[in-house]
Amino acid sequence: MSLFRNILVGVDLTQYDATTLQPSHVARSVVQQALWLAEQTKARLTFFSVLDLSIESLPHLDETDFRYLTTTAERTAATILHGLVQQARAKGIEATDKLALGSVWLEMVRQSLRDQHDLVLIGTRDRSGMERMLFGSTAIKLVRRCACPVWVAKPGDDPNPLKILVASDLDPVAEEALRLVVELARVVPAQIRLLHVVDFPLDRHWCTGLPSAKETAYRHQVRERALQGLEKQIERVGGAELSPPVKIHLVDEIGILPDEGILNFLKNNAIDLVAMGTVAHGGLAGVMIGNTAERLLPELTCSLLAVKPKSFVSPVRL
Image 1: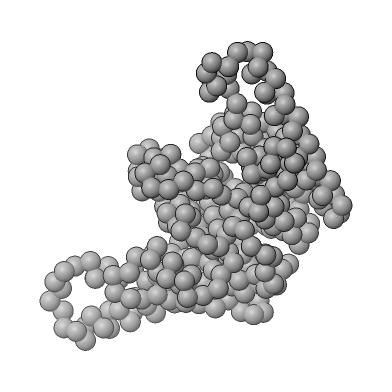
Image 2: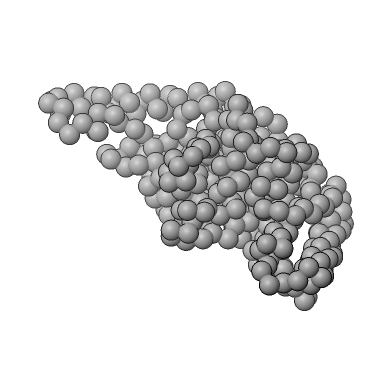
C-alpha cells in the first residue's frame, strides 16, 4: 500500500457561519490537518461538500422559495470551497473543489470511488445514545462503507512527532494498517506503538480442571506466539529499520476485551492517532454490533485512521 496521493477532504458546511463564512474550531482543525498532511505527502486535495436538500425535507415551503434557498446555499458553499482551494494553493498544494446534492455519507463514498481517492479525511459530530446506535454518524457510516482508508480528525495541534497507536489483532487488515502507518513515518516524524490485546480462549471455560502450572504455561505460550506474530508483522511491512523503532505493547490481563484494552492504553499514554483495520458488517449485525473501530470512535479523544482489507468492495454504487 502506497502513501496518500489523492485525498478527499469532507467540508461540513454546518460548521461555517452562514453570514461571516468563518469556520468553527472543528472545521478549521480538519482543514489544517488536511493541509499539513498534503504538505508532508505531496498529495492532491479535493475539498468536497454535500448539501442535503430536497423539497420533501422542507414541508410547507413553496417551490419558488425552495429554489431560492438552494441557489443561495450553493453559492455560499462555492465561496467557502473556493477559499479553501486558494488556501491550499498558497502553500503550493494542488487542490480542487466539488459540491454535490444528496446524503452526505453516500455522496462522499461515491466521490471517493468516482475519482479513486486513496484517503477520506473528515471531522466528526457524534450523536449519542440510542440515536447513534440506530442511525450512526456520518463518520461511522464512512468507516463502514468506504473502500479507501478513512481518517477521522479530532481537533488539536499538529504534533511533532506524531504519536501513533496501531491496534492489531494479528490479521491481514491490521497489518495493512501498520503498513500504511510505517509509510507515513517515513515522511513525517512519528513514534509508532503496536498494541495487541491477547486472547486466551482457555479463559472462556469456567472450569478447566488443569493444574495452575499448566494454565500458567498455556498463558505464556499464547503470549509468546502473539509477540512473535507482532514482530513478524513489523518485519513484513518494513518497519524494523524505523527510528525510533516500533514499540510493541501486549495487554494480557485475564478477561479484558480489545475495546477496553485499547481505551485503557489511551488513557495512560499520549496518542495523536489510532490506526486499525476494520471489516464491514451488513444488515442488523452491522447496526447493532458494528466493529471495534466503529465502537471506539465516539469514545476517542484522538484521531482515527480506519483501513479496509484489500479485498473489500464498497456496497455503494455510483
